[in-house]
Length: 344
Ligand code: TLP
Image 1 (tube, rainbow, N blue to C red):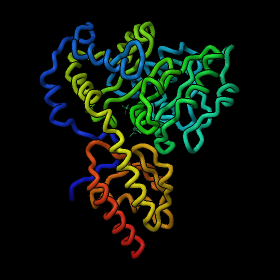
Image 2 (image 1 turned 135 degrees about the vertical axis):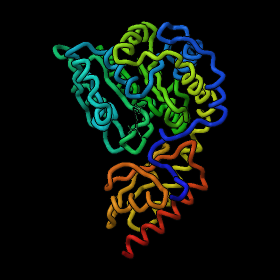
Image 3 (image 1 turned 90 degrees about the vertical axis):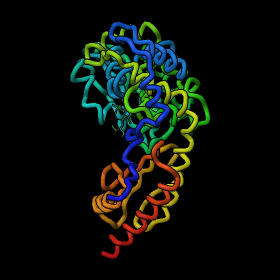
Image 4 (image 1 turned 180 degrees about the horizontal axis):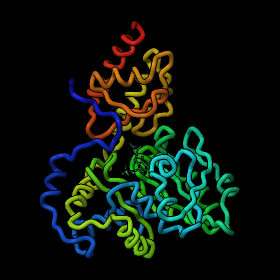
């Protein structure tokens, strides 16, 4: 097996030496009892990083969104989500299954945008009642698009006018902020609650947070416990997350430059349909044309280049553990593999 160039996701990174060092030297307590100093410090730093009052450290982005929805919604309440949202497609219908929350979708267009009028027409104030409108930024399934502040604000105005809160699944919010050349706190101004992940572009092995007003986080904490997210000496993980927050936010644009380089190179190859202008953050999606996508993915895998997505819409993601030289190598391999597939 050749050296692997793992473009499946930005979730695949391994802790860098400085991060491992921070983990092994972390001061620890018992976070369920509220006295793990590393977790408490991380929660304060994470809340500040996105301009919110308080935060709750959880094991995954999925749990952050779940706890948020279970806190925003009672049984029978409704949450509005984008038709292409991660909450709708990949989170195991957690809030409906565990909390009796219905998910109602409004369309995301190809660029991830949601029309505020569609939200206005979908929100309900009787029975059922919409208690939260969820946005996602970056918008994973829509090319990893960064959603600009103005658009978030317009949807938030509609939600707030109808008495609903706004939750942002900001798994990759620092990618969005870097792409939009703004800071996360400004971008998230209109949001009431925000989840974001340390274990994606930020490069930590585990962990996400839910952030929001202090009274909301106080209500969310026992719900985290209910869904099994109470952790004990989790300071060892919080230390990695803190290292990520302190050292890896500023480097997001390197991943974006690598994604653009990858997209430009792939777009030159025969049999690949890709518009590089759609690549704004660290995700590259492309459609094989006239070659079998499953065969292409398998042949790339054989040569050590890993991807995800569907055979008709392949996804490659750049991150901390992929260098520019590896992007060039992946492009060379893709060119050779496509020539072989076309020849065969
Ligand atoms: N996304 C993963 C897969 O689940 C698709 C990936 O490889 O992109 N929100 C968004 C926008 C996400 O992209 C993800 C993970 C999550 C939430 C969930 O995070 P985890 O995996 O920590 O539960």
